[in-house]
Figure (spheres, rainbow, N blue to C red):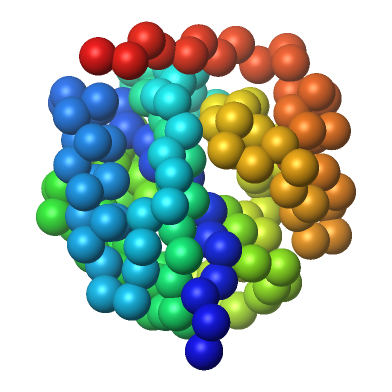
Length: 162
């Protein structure tokens, strides 16, 4: 089986978010049957439909032969390593890993929807995704670049590299 091109959104707004994202990227790179291909810059954005401090977000591109449910489970295990709790919907979080796109697959299963159902509405996903793959066509949605142009009203700040 050939590896699929996959995009994962990373976010955190509790604790040292940048350090947490950097550690999570190392853990993504260590997943079995998976290679970390590229990582966007880190971005700061206000919570959307959530509470708490500003988020630090990024997007990682992976190549994997893991099937979507297995990859989602691995992402949730990484969240747990970093103390992710889900006391209520949209709670502040130490780490959030969202499976955004898995090749051109469209999936509607309990606990898994691909493409991620709100990725085309959120600048904190679209800007880093556009940085990695501006030409990308999201199944059923169109291009990342077109949707990113529509999300310009959402404040987002590219953080400088450290």
